[in-house]
Amino acid sequence: MLNNVFRGVLPNLGYLIILLILTLPIIAPFFHSGFFPSHDGEWAVVRLGDMFREVRDLQIPARYSGVLNLEYGYPLFNFAYPGPYYMGLIFYILGFGLVGSIKLLFALSVLISGVFMYVLSREIWQDKLASLLAAVSYIYFPYRFVDLFVRGSIGESISFAIFPLVVLSVIKIYRNPISSSFMLLGGLTFGLLIVTHNIMAVLFSLFLLFLSGFLVWQKKEILKPLALLFSLGFLLSAFFWIPALLEKKYILLSIVPIADRNQFFVSLKQFIFPSWGYGVPTDTVHGFTYQLGFPFLIILASGAFYVLKEFFDKKNMGNFNFKLVFMFFILDLFFIFFLFKSSAIFWKLPLLSEINFPWTMLPIIVFISSLIIGFLSTIRFFKFLTLTLITLAVIYFLPYAKPQYYVDRGDNFYLTNQATTTSSLELMPIWVKTFPAQAPKEKIEALKGKGKLSDLRLTSKNINFNFVAEDQSTIRINRIYYPGWKIIDNGEEKEINYDNKFGVMDIVLTQGTHKITAKFSETPIRLVSNLISVFTLIIFLSYSLKLFRLRVSR
Image 1 (cartoon, rainbow, N blue to C red):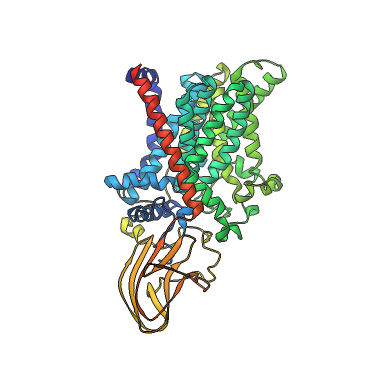
Image 2: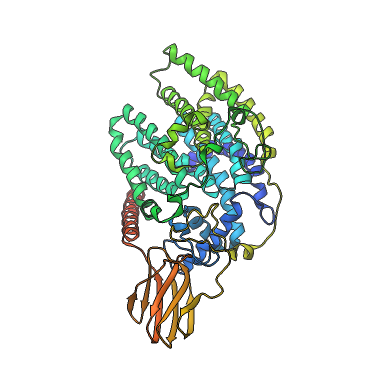
């Protein structure tokens, strides 16, 4: 088995070393001391700290923060993608710290995405130089630098590393429909994509739908394994996407969109001409770039003319790779169309209507364009053109690989940050009428009546205390109610009243001694979703182990 691995790596080693060398300048800023401000990068550190608290409290899967939203609580990971933070926990537990773990995730996302794009292109186009050029393109498109150094989107950055693995599995199934191992790998990585960035999962699923349809049209027998692959991905990630979908009605996002989509359509000038900035996209002077990159545009435009000429001359139409790249060009244009205001009416369609920023199409465009560049690099006429222009792209775009400036705040700064980490408080429950402006002075307070509080203990999922009421009392627990919270008083469940301006939990206590336990537990929907994921994971691991044993025994 190891011999097979070495036989696969050694012929490609030189190209992979070149890829590594070209990757190092991009990720070097992540090895600088401290961190750097970006739109979301520092919030990712705060979220990792919160994920650690919730997992430490045995709230698995993590859903509700007891610290964020100024200690009033926030159902962050019930809706915000949790995947990168589960990954980050591994590095944090290994001692890399909060900041170090997030920086390591960003750096690895670039390195791994390049390697996996090389592997995918090698599988499809069967050409080492072409695969290298596809991989270099993939990590040097300007939007990759936007994700890393301006937007700081950890979810999108990791998604770039997952895209090639999902498609590799689909292509492997096309080559060998009875290959169970790639059905399992594809299902695992597709599920990982869903929990890594839900919007990327939706958009990439659209690409996968077209790709799978094309491949099934070519070879009908792959329909079943592909259906199993996607089913496996949906079932493994059910713990996240089912509650996020069905419980969206409880949060502000169901009523008010995060942003006005019309402000974020891309102009043709922004798409074609070079620009750079660290600001928000609505800042026409200092906003971040939407450019595809002129060297890549030249390659793609030249390639489009070549493919169209071959198509109308009816040459190569029996060639699988030509048909595949012809479809890639159509899909690239399809996703590019959605960047512009002329597509506005289509953004009202189901699922797309949930996405506020048209430029989120750019990661899919970058992925498809890289594969197209790989194909064009297999053609003798294009080899010199792509090699020259991609070399130019590396020289021209490498200066983008730097942050605006560095800061060194230390882990404790992020660990004690109590903001919501969301841009518009969009995950706030709809029954919260007044948003918290400061942390509550008291975690537990008596609104009515008198009594004595003792033995208060708080975690993200449990609040325990004793209360001796001198008379009938109304007690307020300053934690925002969200479905799943239950309050037990001396062994009996109490009715929770959250009809107040902060949406926090009030209970009525009779005169006497009370042992109170407030516990955040899973609702029936979340429990069923968890069970679906757990049972699917057990089946996945069992079948994977069986396949491994069969291979070892051969």
